[in-house]
Structures are given as structure tokens and as C-alpha cells.
Image (cartoon, helix red, strand yellow):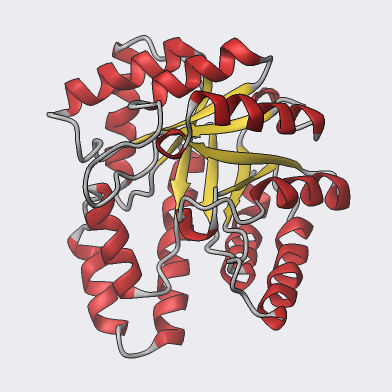
Length: 288
């Protein structure tokens, strides 16, 4: 099933998860699958699976996990493909594996630049990878976008032009990078409309549970942190439970506002945390 069809009945709620690291202990792997049971029980429209734990660039069972999700839960699984780590030959081989596994959906990404800035694969831009995927089969291709503007773009105009190229190459739905100010998302949608980008745009939402982690991710992705959010983190930084609860409340508040404005959908960056994800889904259940 192509998950773009889920948008016929909006809004779409979906999750992102990380596969366990190859070095994970048996106990950690068991805990991961227990957590996955809980996440699957929340009935997301689909679950996207990063390419390697934490986007490490090493395929630590992404395809195997996608197979498991489809077979065990009957939920569509969407593997991430970061083009920066692939040659054209490697993509072709991987797509053949996906076809054999009846995987119909792919999240096509460029991937984070390595520290030396040298791209070793054959795909300099995500749009190049999208074109390659569309040439090789009838996959539904998802893409990423940035309400706060891609950190490598000159400005918002340059960013939206690049996004238009990606959509024109064959992306049928978009997921935003995390953001913490809904107004940025709404202004981004206006830019998409002006650029004639007419595909569903899911809002990517992450609940803060760790101050250091969120600040690192925000810096890496050029995401602005509003004063309200910073005050919350500073106030609860020495109380992990309070930080988790406050972060969950902030995410719920964001999502309620988005749903009231008719958002296409919400993609929850779960960080493999079923407790927080279950609270969020419970809070918005009657609003969907």
C-alpha cells in the first residue's frame, strides 16, 4: 500500500523509529521490541525506519525491521534511504530487496554531510536520489522539508526552489524537520503554495525529554528555539521526569493547534519512547 493514499482520510498520524544498534545487548534488543509492540498498538498509519541507529549511515537491520513491522503488525513500514551513503549500483540493489519484501514506500534523503564535507556516494542532492528511485520502480517516495529553512540554503526562497525540484522529481508527500514554533510551519505552507508545491505536508513533531539532545539536533538542523521553549528547558533541566512531562505537554499543545488548523498529518519523532508517544496519542485521540 502506498501511504500517500492515507491522506484521503486526514489527518495522518505516523511514527519514526531507530533500529537497535548492531552492538546492542540482548536485553536492549528485547526492550526495543517491547517498546515497538506499544508503538504499534497505537495504530499509526505507517512507521518510518531510519537507515542505521540514530542515522549513523550504517544499515543496522533497517530492511529486516521493515519486514518485521509489516508482517507482525500489518502496518506499512517506510525505510529511509540517505543518498549520501549510496552509489547508483547500491541503490539499485537495495531497491530490488525492497521490491522483494513488498515495501512500496521510501523516504528519500540526502543525509547529513560527513565532517570532512566530502560526499562519497553518487547523489549530491535528494532530488537526484528521488529521480533514480522513480526510474527503477513504482515506489511511493516521501521527502523531507524544513519549516525553519534548510541550514545549507541561502535563504527561504532558495530553500523552496530546491524543494520544488525534489517534488517535481517524484516526491508525493513531505515530512517536515522538527520545529517548535507553529507559525514557522504555517508560513512554510504559504511558501509551498506560492511555489505550486501541492503534496501533503506532515508536521514533524518531537517531544523534548533531554535538553542536550534537543539543542544538538536544533543546531544541526537550523531549528529555532523560542523563548517559551528555552524557559521550559532551563526551568526543568535538573528534573528529568518534569522535563519529560513538560516536553510532552508542549508537543501536545503544538499538535492540538496544528489539528485545529487542518494539518495534513503529524509525524512523531518517537525516539523509540513509547511512554511519551502513548501520552501524546491519548491526548489527541478524540481530535483526529
